[in-house]
Image (cartoon, rainbow, N blue to C red; front, side, top):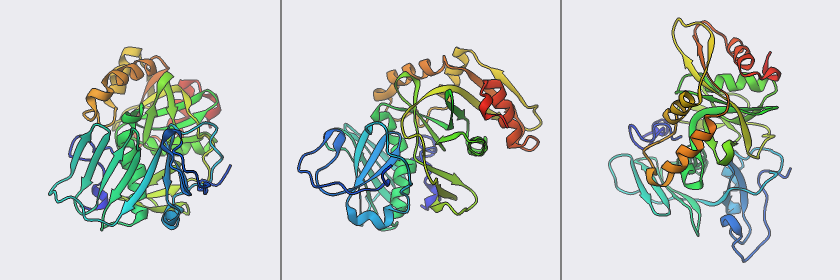
Length: 335
């Protein structure tokens, strides 16, 4: 398989599953610190969703390509994972595979890489491959593997982008091709804060845990740090909101050919149903996540929710953004 096929574990379940300096050297410490941090000298990367990856200093050449310049986080990480990659043969399996374990999961794409995500007493994320570079393994770890593991870390992932405003986070929920990234870029152009490009990770009290400061585009730019699948991955110069954020409003994007530009206000029950529909990989970790998923979605559905109807062929992103901001009462995001 190619890197382009990296959108999921199988045809259904994981189609969606893709200021100090951000890197700094820690002093030697023989003790294992809370959250899984190891003793010894290492490099750290804030990988989004409250997760910090820790790697040996010799990985710096590849990892520094992804390390964004950002302000120091104002809160402790939700989870620290030891990250490593080894040049070893993959498991001999003919198709894409996924195995759940008591302490995490394993997943593999033949001809690409195998990954092991582990929580508990020895939290780690490891990649094994002879086909890809360390840099490619890191992008896969951040953009696909970590989102898969979010339910194991107490977060519920939704298909969506998010931007920050004065009142909190604006969630832009929708299917692939609905315009989530396009609208989020339009809001960022209006001085909104970038929070997430593809995954909205919801935690307790309807708090959004911002994703990695990476954005995927069909076009290359000066910020491009690599390719993932058929998209260019751009590293944002600075992420200014590393802490979790309350959700101000949720907008479900529903583009359709020939429709008018309009917004419909949803009841809590209607929002609840749509949020469940847009949960990522809902058939994974069912026993571990179901009760929490319903509780988180029920709480989130009580925040203001709308459906945005528009025609991408007729309505420009700035038109949709203006109408959206007006409907949601987010005056500061109006053009």
